[in-house]
Image (cartoon, rainbow, N blue to C red; front, top):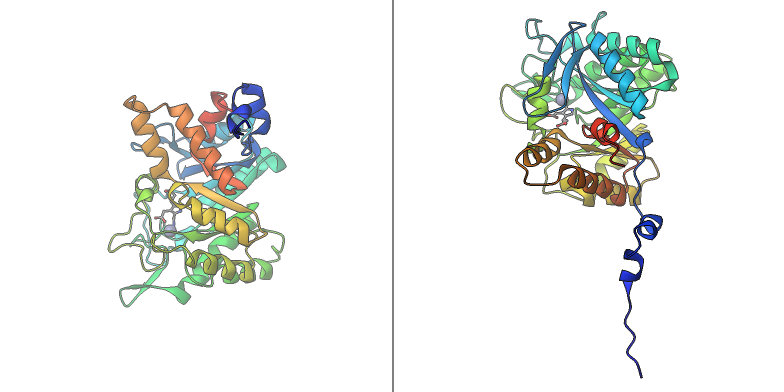
Length: 328
Ligand code: PBG
Ligand code: ZN
């Protein structure tokens, strides 16, 4: 009798057949492009550790977003980078001032692009506080409950300016509920919250902190962001956010946390976003510059891994290059 060999390779020979049966697919509609917004409208600054990514004033931002839209990037996530000469306060009040940077950027983008574009905004105090922490300080600690009102005001300022989605990244307990209540109170009942539900205290944020001038001036973020050694806690964090009214859940960073992404996808019915963070981007760029890896293949492998693990949305600095160079 002939021995039966099971041959998974049968589906790997013909490239078109391989494509036909491939499980994870990428689509420009699921990409979210992050942007760092400067106060001077025509300003442009390179970010050393993130080749290809710039900080831009609103005028430049409008031009960049217009080009990106042509490539098929329909969603943006905005981060404010206040000018170095602008005073910062312990409570981060400039984040929600009348003339605040992100509300102005949101208004400009919505006016120009309307519903062509999904404008998401990061809600966090760290780029606006003089101490660089994501909440306010009391007794030398980042105080949870006193931070909530500030975050809620910031979210309302963004949503009132027309933000399509607000995305709190501070990791204070109860902030989704505080933001939901404040939005509802302001009549912004239809503005969704994309919560950075599962955000780890990660060294992969290094280049971002340079980009956003948001590094903490003392200590670290380990008293509010999650410990990378913990997996099950992710379910608790996401569960709380769902109960508090989060519409989209997020896992951040991505590559070292694919297990967490897969678990969230399994446990929850809400869309799950992944944030392919700055350090993950910079590592690919640096190795590619040295000719040590094939940039296109590594980038696509990473992005497909997010899809395979269950990501519905991918926030990634690679989005523009992937589409501009027609890698998909
Ligand atoms: C602010 C914030 C950070 C990132 C997104 N929002 C930095 C941090 O928490 O220290 C990181 C994004 C990236 O690394 O690309 N809270
Ligand atoms: Zn922060």
